[in-house]
Length: 243
Image (tube, rainbow, N blue to C red; front, side, top):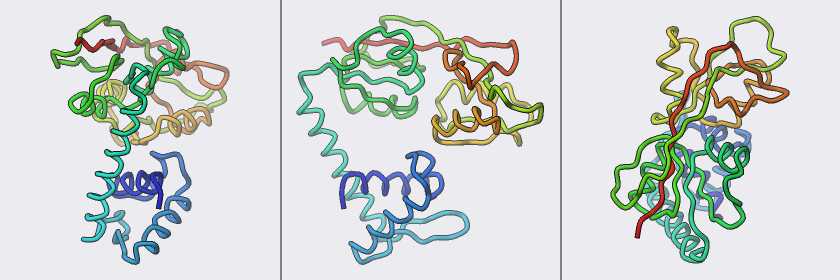
């Protein structure tokens, strides 16, 4: 058992699905299944009950969840204590690609960067302090001061070689993500929407012409093109911690 096994276990517990856990972590389902089986063998107890609807934790599986939560939190606290000399940056995954890679607004090697989704950011800021935060949702905590409000241009993207046929509209599972919420608002036929809890997998499906998705325009490249001429401005916010 190692920290990665605990992280895999927690993801299975949270998603209640081996397939969703694999998509979220970027592993194959067979790899996730093998790691869970090895963990159950090591502990000599079943941790989940499998069914066609997914997985459900057993009584011992719930105990394992409590244990993993404490261990991973303690490990995170230790990492934060050991990296105290570097400023901590909390940032959304889509904003990381824009602020750090495209805009190059600061050198990432001088910071400890934590990349999370919008929903996770709102939860983390109530538990830990971060020197800088880039997020799609406003922060109301008084210890953070708004430095800048700007926006990302977004449009529906498709694969460059996509044929003229109907494909699903992909959204992520982050309920506070503005790209997800705007997609649901704009898409009249909700049956055409597919939820995929992995930005990497969404991009891969769009590149292959198997889906379309509302994404930042900065992602347009040799493989991704705008599906039409429409675009929208997605606001984002930059905060600093005030002592």
